[in-house]
Length: 353
Image (cartoon, one colour):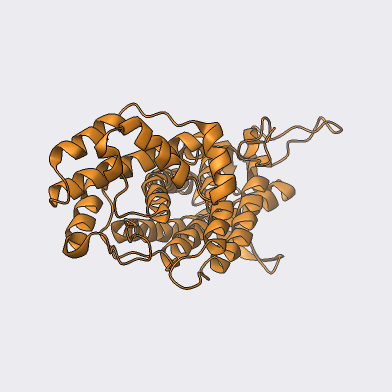
């Protein structure tokens, strides 16, 4: 049994997103860290910091690397981060004199934050693709039922007649803006973290800028000076997630309210009741509301984690670990659920024909 509903044996049937969850697995994290160390060795060899054959030995030694997870757990309990023990294991896998050059000039936060960026970039691509699909699906609904009449409500009271197209626009227009925001962020938001002990890359001297640029290119990330204690990019990405789920929550809330009245929507495939077999509960709609509120709460934690003391922090950094993966997963799950919900809508509005 898991403490997280996103990975829970049965609650994941409601909240789960296996594609996103896998990006935050220990295996995916370690694979990204290994990728960082390989690319770092190659970039440093390219800059002449050590010979090409040293980088080749490091890359070869890590090609079949498999971490001892029990040792990593004990290492984290002692060190607070996984990297010291992970590097010890990597050096044992590389062996020889090349092992001493592994991780040269880097610090634990460089490895962990770059791993995060690599995986967030993949998550953002998944989210953007799903957003595009949902926008198209909702557009199809509007095309099918857009001329049908709806009762417009203001402040929870019946107001004037509107059309399905009017209400659907309040769902799709923000999603289109969120997709544009996400695409814009993706252009320069996923940046390499590489600063060394205190952000100065002191061990690399005059080669620092060249190594960083080459490393970023090899990893497909933006080249940017270290941001160890500058977490605004993380908070900005989390804000985008909360905007997406907030809009999906509005969609879910509207559908749930329409289902309550019943006359202006026909839904199929609702959830059953153990006490009232005649009911079809709008489970997907309700779940969208729940996940939107969940992300709205978590965003405050990411704003708290902006407070990093001096050059590097432990407390603010660890707070990100507790909140950001769940926000990403909640967003991915919300998009899957919204797509399912849209597929359950057999009719919207009163047909004028």
